[in-house]
Structure formats: C-alpha cells, structure tokens
Image (cartoon, rainbow, N blue to C red):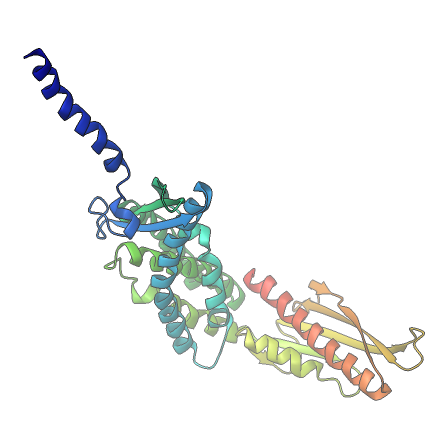
Length: 340
C-alpha cells in the first residue's frame, strides 16, 4: 500500500516535470505578428528577428518605424499636393521646400518616440532572437496632441502679428515663422493619424496652405530691386531674378525704395602651368542694401573653371559664377527677411 501511495503521487509530478519544458518552448503568439494582449486598436507593434538580442531589438523598432513611414507617406503627399495647389506655379518658400522639410521632421528617431521593447524570446531550434516593440496608441496620441496644440498657439500668435504688421517685411517675417510652425504641426498631425485616424481637424484659416497664400502675397508686395554687373555674356541679373522670384519675392525695376540686391561678377584668366588647358577664375560680391544705403548682409563667393579651349573655359567660368552669385543672393535675402 505504501508503494502504491508513493507511485500514485510520483506519476503526476513526473508528468508535470516533463510537460514544463514543452510549455516553456512554446512560440509566443506575437512572434507571428498577432497577439490578443496587444490589440491593433490600442497598439502598434513591430516584431524584430536577429542573430543576437541587440539586433532583434533594433529590427523590432525599425519595423515600427516602417509601419509609420508607410502610413504617414500618403498624408505627406496630400499636404504637398494641397500646398502646390494653393500657390499654383509660384513655387515660393512654402511649396518649394515643403516635402524636404516634412521629411526632415519625420526622422526615424521621431517616429520611434514612445516605442518600447516589451519582451523578447529565443528560438532554441532556429537559434534566433525575437523582440517585440510596442507603441501605445493612446499615450502617443495624447503626447502628439499636446505638441500640436502648442504649435497651433504659435501659429495663431504669429498670424496675429502679421495682421498688425505695418510693413511687408514685418508681415513676411511673422508669416514665415507661422509657416515653419505649420510645417512642423502638419508632420506631427500625420503621425497622430496613424494612432488616431479621426485626429483633430485643422481649421481652414490656420492651414499651412492658407499661410502660404498670405506669405506669398507679402513677399510679392516686398519687391526687391536687382543691381547686377557682370562680364560680357553674363546672365547674372537673369539668374538672380530666377532665384528671388523662386523664393516668392517680387522684383521691380528703377531706383531703390526698399531692399536692393547688389551683385558683381569678375572673370579673369590665370595660369596654372598647364600647357594645353585654359583656366579662368571668377569672383563675386553680393550685398543686401536697405533704402538708406545701409548694407544689411553680404557674401563674396569665388571659384575656378578650366577647359581645353579658351572661349569655352571663359564661358564655363562665367556660367558658374552667375549661378553661384545668384544662389548667394537668394540665400542672403531669405535669411534676412525670413530667417531661413
């Protein structure tokens, strides 16, 4: 009887001991991308696989980023289309840089804010590590909404300043700041739509497209006089006009009454000791001058070009100088007026 008693006690314990390793080795549900513990309505999850634990964790976070990028992309395209339509063919400072600025804001690190590695698992048979990255949609939505609200307050404040501004320059500066906040707000809103599809609507009057319209009007009113002097066959003034109008500014002829962009270009031959090649150097000056003749900003770009034929070398240097000086002129104007 004693033997039978211990036998009956030993058998269930032995069976439990044998079953335990099998249970421990069971593949977690999340490894296949679905887990009732993390419903899609509440979480964004990413599963990473790697030869080591660090690699698996990095890949899990990268998967979260990939999901965000894919879902956000259409929103960014919609914003870009809206911007282009609002300014038409005038690819001013707003539309011309919208896509690149949004891409800058939506970096991988920003997309991963709030994502944590919840758990890991090692597949002994395949000798691979798995990691589960989880982003809580509710927490992310609340954080993004707070940031968006702050930016909308900034936009409203800068637009109010623009309405009170007494000069086109002051109005343009305020609207430029409003637009910068609008671009950042749009990027955050695109991220929020991933975790909260309903989101919060942007009022039409506060949309970045509406700000663009007002900004382009202010820049067009702030007409700039171009004063360019270059060598024969130089297209310096034409190139400057392209840069300035491309930024959204208006250009006017005649005597200075507001802002004037003064630019010069010199092209001279020089000897580099090469018997066959001909070389020319170019040097330029750019100055932004106010109505009183005060120099507000300036630059002195320079460079060199070479060709086998003398005329070709000179033409190449002139073209390079025209482009570089005009580029500097646009940069100086944008930085001074818009702070960009």
